[in-house]
Image 1 (tube, rainbow, N blue to C red):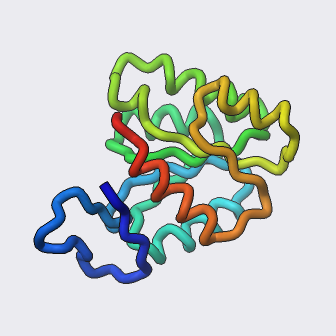
Image 2 (cartoon, rainbow, N blue to C red):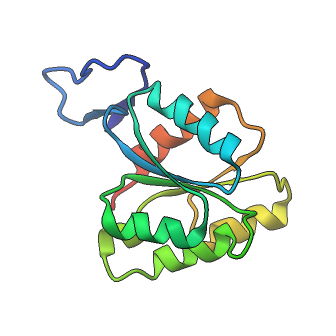
Image 3 (cartoon, rainbow, N blue to C red):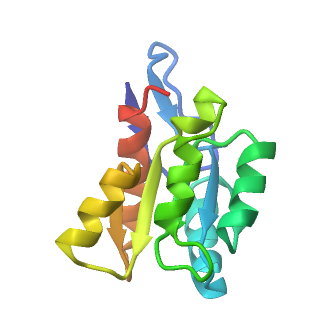
Length: 150
């Protein structure tokens, strides 16, 4: 399968290739306690036709995950009360198999090998350092969707 990354809101599926997906109409949950980061990511993703839901805490994120069909998670690691590591562990323990296996990107200002390894061990598939480049974020989303078999 291949992904077409485009800012166009038009359907870009070639007539002869049913293994191609676009980012249009994806449902992504972004979890971050920083309102500016949520706004920035929402603007970037909506520009690609992605439908964005947001949460400012782990508990709020779990409620959204339980009540909505989502394609991917983007979770900040350093949040007050409950961090992103704990949140992704809870997601990976959900009874719903599809939700439990949902791809997730760790978003953090922690640029250490230890933090990166802990993110992967906790259940994230990708790790993105703040500040991030918008094209890098979209590329990581597309890559995860191609690799995902959930």
